[in-house]
Amino acid sequence: MLIRIDPTSSVAIYDQLAAAIRGGVAAGDIRAGQRLPPARELAASLGINVHTVLKAYAALRDEGLLHVRRGRGAVVTDVRPGEVELSRAVAELLAVGRRNGLSLTQIHHALDQGAES
Image 1 (cartoon, rainbow, N blue to C red):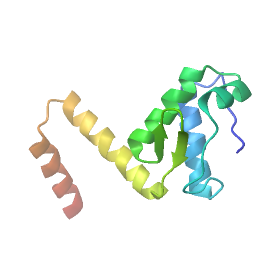
Image 2 (tube, rainbow, N blue to C red):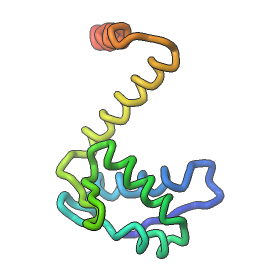
Image 3 (cartoon, rainbow, N blue to C red):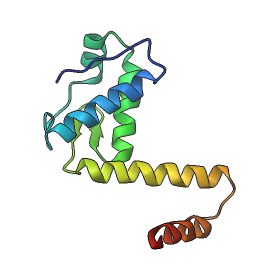
Image 4 (cartoon, one colour):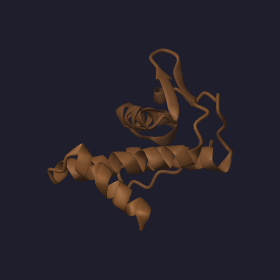
Protein backbone atom coordinates (compact mmCIF):
# COMPACT_ATOMS: atom_id res chain seq x y z
CA MET A 1 0.00 0.00 0.00
CA LEU A 2 1.55 3.26 -1.15
CA ILE A 3 0.46 6.32 0.81
CA ARG A 4 1.77 9.81 0.29
CA ILE A 5 1.26 12.58 2.81
CA ASP A 6 1.80 16.26 2.00
CA PRO A 7 2.81 18.03 5.23
CA THR A 8 2.41 21.42 3.50
CA SER A 9 -1.23 20.77 2.57
CA SER A 10 -4.04 22.62 4.33
CA VAL A 11 -5.79 19.26 4.66
CA ALA A 12 -5.14 17.62 8.03
CA ILE A 13 -2.69 14.72 7.87
CA TYR A 14 -5.19 12.26 9.33
CA ASP A 15 -7.69 13.32 6.62
CA GLN A 16 -5.05 12.76 3.94
CA LEU A 17 -4.32 9.32 5.34
CA ALA A 18 -8.00 8.38 5.57
CA ALA A 19 -8.56 9.63 2.01
CA ALA A 20 -5.62 7.57 0.75
CA ILE A 21 -7.04 4.43 2.35
CA ARG A 22 -10.53 5.18 1.01
CA GLY A 23 -9.00 5.67 -2.43
CA GLY A 24 -7.14 2.37 -2.15
CA VAL A 25 -10.38 0.58 -1.31
CA ALA A 26 -12.24 2.30 -4.15
CA ALA A 27 -9.49 1.38 -6.63
CA GLY A 28 -9.41 -2.22 -5.45
CA ASP A 29 -5.82 -1.96 -4.22
CA ILE A 30 -7.05 -2.63 -0.68
CA ARG A 31 -9.61 -5.42 -0.41
CA ALA A 32 -12.23 -6.47 2.12
CA GLY A 33 -10.68 -8.58 4.84
CA GLN A 34 -7.22 -7.10 4.32
CA ARG A 35 -5.41 -6.10 7.49
CA LEU A 36 -3.88 -2.63 7.44
CA PRO A 37 -0.42 -2.04 8.92
CA PRO A 38 -0.31 -1.53 12.69
CA ALA A 39 -0.60 2.14 13.60
CA ARG A 40 2.95 2.34 14.96
CA GLU A 41 4.41 0.74 11.84
CA LEU A 42 2.45 2.97 9.47
CA ALA A 43 3.29 6.08 11.49
CA ALA A 44 6.99 5.22 11.42
CA SER A 45 6.97 4.56 7.68
CA LEU A 46 5.22 7.88 6.97
CA GLY A 47 7.16 9.88 9.54
CA ILE A 48 4.01 10.97 11.39
CA ASN A 49 2.67 10.62 14.92
CA VAL A 50 1.01 7.32 15.83
CA HIS A 51 -2.00 9.23 17.19
CA THR A 52 -2.53 10.71 13.73
CA VAL A 53 -2.78 7.20 12.27
CA LEU A 54 -5.11 6.15 15.08
CA LYS A 55 -7.33 9.19 14.37
CA ALA A 56 -7.52 8.26 10.67
CA TYR A 57 -8.31 4.63 11.54
CA ALA A 58 -11.00 5.80 13.99
CA ALA A 59 -12.60 8.02 11.33
CA LEU A 60 -12.66 5.11 8.88
CA ARG A 61 -14.08 2.86 11.60
CA ASP A 62 -16.85 5.39 12.24
CA GLU A 63 -17.62 5.37 8.50
CA GLY A 64 -17.90 1.58 8.58
CA LEU A 65 -14.90 1.02 6.33
CA LEU A 66 -12.70 -0.58 9.02
CA HIS A 67 -13.06 -2.90 11.97
CA VAL A 68 -10.53 -1.77 14.55
CA ARG A 69 -9.72 -3.97 17.51
CA ARG A 70 -7.09 -3.16 20.09
CA GLY A 71 -4.18 -5.53 19.73
CA ARG A 72 -5.60 -7.01 16.51
CA GLY A 73 -5.26 -4.06 14.19
CA ALA A 74 -7.50 -2.61 11.52
CA VAL A 75 -9.24 -4.80 8.97
CA VAL A 76 -11.10 -3.52 5.90
CA THR A 77 -14.81 -4.34 5.95
CA ASP A 78 -16.86 -5.44 2.96
CA VAL A 79 -18.65 -2.09 2.78
CA ARG A 80 -18.53 -0.57 -0.70
CA PRO A 81 -16.98 2.89 -1.12
CA GLY A 82 -20.32 4.32 -2.29
CA GLU A 83 -21.87 3.32 1.01
CA VAL A 84 -19.01 4.97 2.85
CA GLU A 85 -19.45 8.16 0.84
CA LEU A 86 -23.18 8.17 1.56
CA SER A 87 -22.53 7.63 5.26
CA ARG A 88 -20.12 10.59 5.30
CA ALA A 89 -22.64 12.77 3.47
CA VAL A 90 -25.36 11.86 5.98
CA ALA A 91 -23.05 12.65 8.89
CA GLU A 92 -22.21 16.01 7.30
CA LEU A 93 -25.90 16.76 6.70
CA LEU A 94 -26.74 15.99 10.33
CA ALA A 95 -23.84 18.15 11.55
CA VAL A 96 -24.98 21.10 9.42
CA GLY A 97 -28.53 20.65 10.67
CA ARG A 98 -27.42 20.58 14.31
CA ARG A 99 -25.22 23.66 13.86
CA ASN A 100 -28.24 25.51 12.49
CA GLY A 101 -30.64 24.32 15.18
CA LEU A 102 -32.73 22.11 12.91
CA SER A 103 -34.62 19.15 14.29
CA LEU A 104 -34.28 15.68 12.82
CA THR A 105 -37.82 16.07 11.46
CA GLN A 106 -36.82 19.26 9.64
CA ILE A 107 -33.73 17.58 8.19
CA HIS A 108 -35.82 14.61 7.07
CA HIS A 109 -38.32 16.98 5.45
CA ALA A 110 -35.49 18.70 3.57
CA LEU A 111 -34.30 15.29 2.31
CA ASP A 112 -37.82 14.47 1.14
CA GLN A 113 -38.06 17.77 -0.71
CA GLY A 114 -34.67 17.22 -2.30
CA ALA A 115 -35.70 13.75 -3.47
CA GLU A 116 -38.84 15.14 -5.09
CA SER A 117 -37.07 17.86 -7.08
